[in-house]
Length: 209
Image 1 (cartoon, helix red, strand yellow):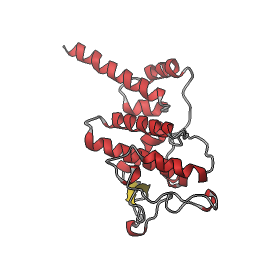
Image 2 (cartoon, one colour):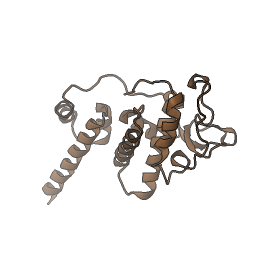
Image 3 (cartoon, one colour):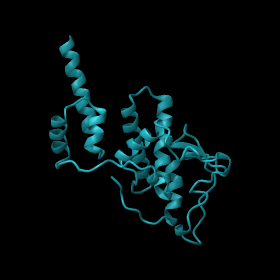
């Protein structure tokens, strides 16, 4: 019986690793979230991705999440993640995977390129768990956005309500009816509509890994 359980556990670990690789996770994420050996993960990565994993350190700074467009994408993902935490009994990494898949699906419906990689999404959750980042309610629209913990909530205004100057002048203002998506973690699905309406004013940004 113990041997049978071990095989099933290993099969689940492999399935989880394959999903993470397909979503673009770095090898370090797989090492942290599975019990498979480095050698097995390396072989699995090469087989699934068709290439060797990227080298170098993982993103470790919270600054990226504070910039305009990345903050909106990170907030969309984190609202979805927090919603799943409330309604689904999943292991933490499976919650990250599911939230990220929903994030990608929502962007696809709006024909938007994802700015948030799986590795950054995973890192974001770690930052929040460690108290390095949090969610703050926008004082204008009521949406919840990723911020530093010391942000004064009463005066906080999000990047959708107050876009930077580079967003362009004379563009349609982003709607303030943010009681959809980012405004309510219990209803994350409509959030891409906000991103879609802000896309016209948004500069093209490179993907991140």
